[in-house]
Length: 194
Length: 129
Image (cartoon, rainbow over all chains, first blue to last red; front, side, top):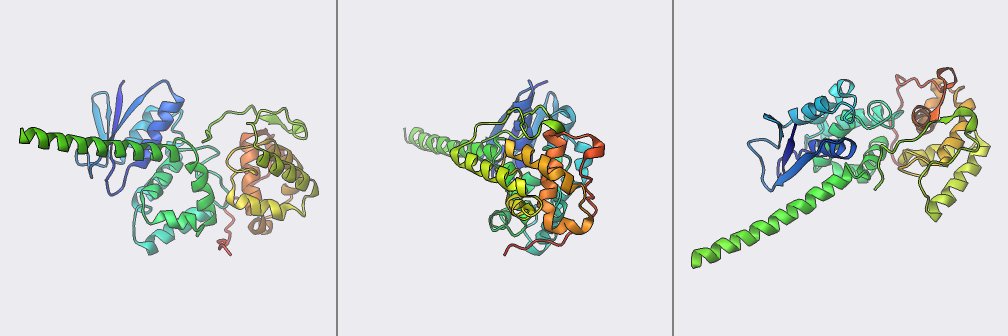
């Protein structure tokens, strides 16, 4: 089956979870997911669209779909469900008071745990990290170590090429898109003149 | 950037003092840190405090990747950690977390020899000083 993922780089909640999930599939399996970005707020009305063969899934269903297709690399989907829910509903909020309650809960969970579920990266880590990465409120909270365990866990994942590395890759790709669209716009202008 | 899913052959509990090396190359600084932790781990339990402080911000002793220091120190800590009760958790939470990671990933510890971690123990939040 062929897979292609398109991520809206300006979406209110950028789908970093889907981006990381795709990177896991691409680095750990023989399958290959084509990843594209659009410099827009939405793609087909969603933050992310996955085409899997003839099927199309959007937003939160994307990671779920990938996890069901590649359970050997996107592990622990069942046990992750609770945290996937927390990620999409509580960790993307910009209201500091509400966010603080959820981060405190995550911090307590990580007191005695290196990963959210089990002893390796699972769907829960991908969902929670992605949600936090997309939340503009979170960067300084992590940097200032407001929540000791959250910061340790977040930075541990960030240094992995499929987490922080993909975010960098996306930023570069989007910068390229911007450059190209500028050239195109100029080109149009010229042809209009002519 | 390292890869979190690098696969390791699990070490046996009896081989921890001189593990057959299978870890990545270390920088000079990491080598120095490794020596430091190897030395400090000889003085458990009084050096648990230093270990705990270090592991607050690091998943493994040297940072983001496992090293020989992790398995050697784990072997030395195990007999002591097994005696921990829930009242010992708050002050040693990062050591317990780290030991639980090592015993479930790098070292093949029989269930009867493992540190039993009670995840239901509620610990007060640590505030950065």
